[in-house]
Length: 168
Ligand SMILES: Cc1cc2nc3c(=O)[nH]c(=O)nc-3n(C[C@H](O)[C@H](O)[C@H](O)COP(=O)(O)O)c2cc1C
Image 1 (cartoon, protein in one colour):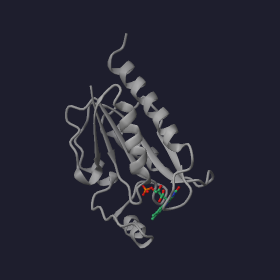
Image 2 (cartoon, protein in one colour):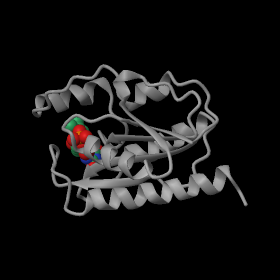
Image 3 (cartoon, helix red, strand yellow):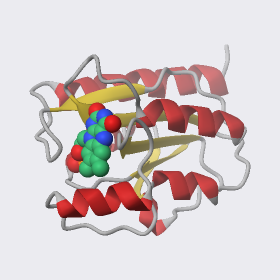
């Protein structure tokens, strides 16, 4: 079984979560980890996991990525998760989405929820709910325990995918 983990990250926090997710999936899948700006193909993949920072209540846009650069990001990707999903063909794989967002529980909006909906529109089955991992501020860092929580979430995604693709 093959898994592809695609991430976008301006300050490195979503990238850290993506690495933890990829490592956890390695117990059950042959895993490829790639940034969205590489536009990795999901052809032949059983599980696609996507992750992005929440920008302006949803998925980043060129303008919000420019804002991130003004706030100190040294990365300037032309393609974020939104653009990656925009150019994706219809898919037959299982999928799951996560994001990072600031630790303000009453602030609405989640990149993962947007991505989850987009993946469903592309034909994916999504057995796990989208998940958010919290950072303490725009540049991070991740709150204590979030990397472990990401591993646990990835474990649940893996289990749900295996059950879905190989029903007993
Ligand atoms: C332009 C911009 C808009 C943002 N908007 C939101 C938001 O609406 N909600 C939120 O929780 N965090 C918001 N954030 C904080 C990001 O979620 C945070 O920078 C991100 O989780 C860090 O992940 P990264 O290191 O992978 O870029 C915003 C950050 C930037 C730069």
